Length: 283
Ligand SMILES: CC(C)(COP(=O)(O)OP(=O)(O)OC[C@H]1O[C@@H](n2cnc3c(N)ncnc32)[C@H](O)[C@@H]1OP(=O)(O)O)[C@@H](O)C(=O)NCCC(=O)NCCS
Image 1 (cartoon, rainbow, N blue to C red):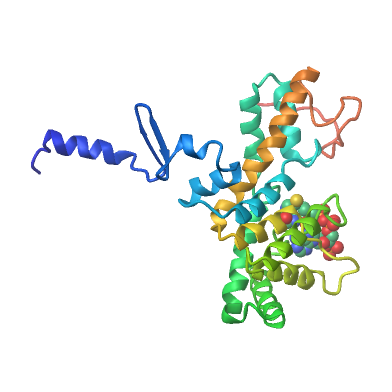
Image 2: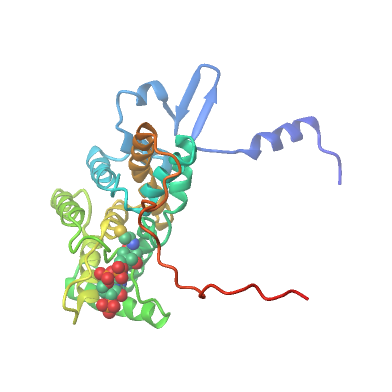
């Protein structure tokens, strides 16, 4: 193979981190082609998130709906594992950034990160309903088919539904009402709200009480209505929850406790192992 010319080597090096997100030169910063000094003071933070992820600015109404979902998800109290982790980490001496990283790592499929799988569920139902996605009865039928398919794969617990703590998560009806209002104004189409409601109805069939849509289920509706790819769902949720994680890390730091475990030391855990016994002789 012929040796590369110096120009080709420089070209390879420049292509190494090729990006269409940001262009920086001495004295010049542009995001997606917009000068930062024009963006500052003009666009809101959710518009900036959208611009960074998708390349174009959303309308103010689209950004507003995204903002509503992000306001809703900032915190769920110190008993939420991610928040507890951030507080425990600080009490063990981690700086705030380390506590945030530890907490964010716990946001996965089961806790706080279920929105992404829920978006996949909704998209599969939308694909199943196809052109009939505007019809409520057809959406219910498509939902039954897809839930049946997931159950055949051994899935019993559906992402975005159920709650350990709330019989009805107060965030869900409020956010759904805001989605409905956005639909009435033509900001979103409303098909994913229809799908989310159908999933809740199908999961609750024959049960004494419903399996309520939780924050992940309703934020998944918003992200899908706004056209985000499912794989971005968890990341956007984390941008919001990071606010609560930071606030709790900071409060715990100021409270100053050291080595705080998950429970006060006066409350023992339950031991379920072998009774005390001698270690067998090692010949
Ligand atoms: C959050 C979660 C762990 C709570 O589970 P839980 O403590 O077992 O909830 P409950 O005790 O209220 O469950 C009552 C019943 O509903 C069922 N159920 C709960 N969530 C369900 C779901 N998402 N899909 C189907 N069934 C569900 C339980 O299996 C249980 O069934 P049973 O009565 O036949 O035994 C669970 O709902 C879940 O994993 N949801 C999906 C993940 C998710 O969305 N996480 C984000 C939470 S904010």
